[in-house]
Length: 284
Length: 289
Image (cartoon, rainbow over all chains, first blue to last red; front, side):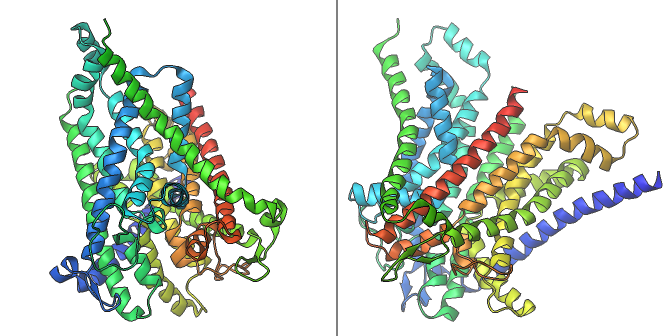
């Protein structure tokens, strides 16, 4: 009995240790980014363009670039994603077609982000002659976000109780009216959560925009969808690997990382909070 | 009774769902179209087994054996770190922790999964690598060891959150039956809960593997980038993803070097595709039970 009790305590202690190590790493990680980033953070840092070959000045063009990349890609992916989810949930025929769509979604979700970058470069940049541009990068990111959005929307719509749909059909509404006026509004908060999560993902991606949209240095803001843009994640990478003044560039990279983390984490926190609230208030 | 509006709407959703298939085929088509011509010049066997990667030499060599090795070592290292930490944390959170700690830990883990990889790369390059170099007196801190740590910590939230899901769906009655038989908590965890959650846990590990082998920014910034057969875990490597990212900028569209980078992406795609397929089978097995 003593052996079993000792084993029990030891086993649980090891499990606790695993959680402790994980937490420890994350605390060191977050503290480091926050501490180093906080030193360079100022109003000037987020509101002015880079100066003196990236060794001074701010990251305003990168913030704007990331904003537009995210907005355009979600604007493309969200309608496509929701319509696909409607098809899968409400129509779902023929079965073999649904199976193929589902396999495609799962395969897309597992494709490494660098391959999205190559795809975007081969198709949007070269074949469709968009050049390295905001548009080419946004479309690449839209393809990357699509499986995430479809899965979120599908799950949200499947969560709507059957009775809602049946009651609506029994009142004489058509399938389309039922979808647009009953199922979508009911599923909306959950679709929103999934979309917000994909926004966080899109805003932080680097590899897909390396060859499709991002430029290391530009003093002016993008004037049209066919301009190259600066972006926060690529800016961090470029500061760490290009240029010759490492001592001056590393602090700026930390500052950029802090801004990016703040954006992504606050976006995700909003999503998690919404979901938490739905779970508490939902009555079915 | 069905009006043209309803038909039109149905048609639109049908067309929209075609896009996923179009995009997937677009990806496959583009990497094969740009990558396959390389094999007119280099045999597939030489491409996969030669250790000579000199794409820019006057007599270029395109052997990706060292790059494959780099990817696998770094991924293996990452999983060796992420499996015990992620799974251990998941078990602790769902089986041992108080409900209050669980309420906090779950969302925090989900939040961590959304940290951009380039920020992990920055942390590894600017903080961990110099630290390790000093502590262990190494030539470079950018090596298999440091990139495995960073990559591993990136994969922890994925494994932790997915295996926590699997563990928490194990029915409460199984645990109660085990306790009623006089089993301790540890015995219940190892002999009842884990076997019952097995397929979900394996799924989470496979997902972590796919994520780690496809990750670009962390290995690009932290693995050091030398295409060699490593002799120890403190040697630099050049994984497939970082080779593509680092060299694509130097190529001219359609030249051999450009084709060879696309050929690497074909290999990468096949590896992740197979992983995905296996993951799927593991999960399907669970849902049909």
